[in-house]
Length: 166
Image (cartoon, rainbow, N blue to C red; front, side, top):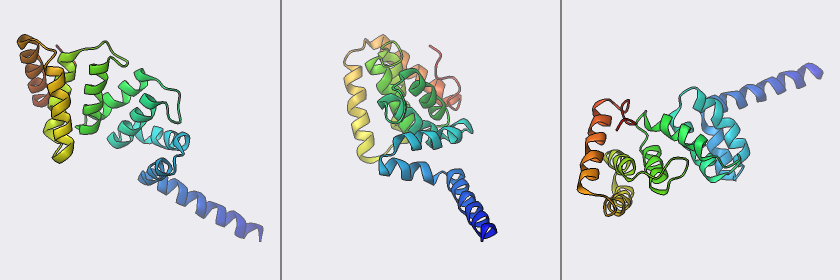
């Protein structure tokens, strides 16, 4: 009987590990509202370079769900995902630069990230992002807009490796 319980535990543990490795379990935890568990499950995936996990971990840090709110940590995870081409993370960086969350407010960088994210999105999301970029543009000089466009071009050409250079 004891051997049966041990084998059963190992099977369940293996299934849990497989689910965590597959990345589905943290999303199920999010859906249940168990943000602390989701954060704990996203962390190792994010550390291994999973852009989706990095983006979601960034969202949790930005909102303080399941973790202590920390805009610097959110920025770190969103940057990592954005450099892999994750449009949601690129949009979050634009939002952070627009609002000055975890970074000094910087409309040039915000415009750049909105432009980059806009190239990856479609449909309603792209329309909303375009409106956000237009709001930022209305606060910029022509020279700043030109600089943001140059930075976006450099970022694209470098495959997201030279996005933080002015």
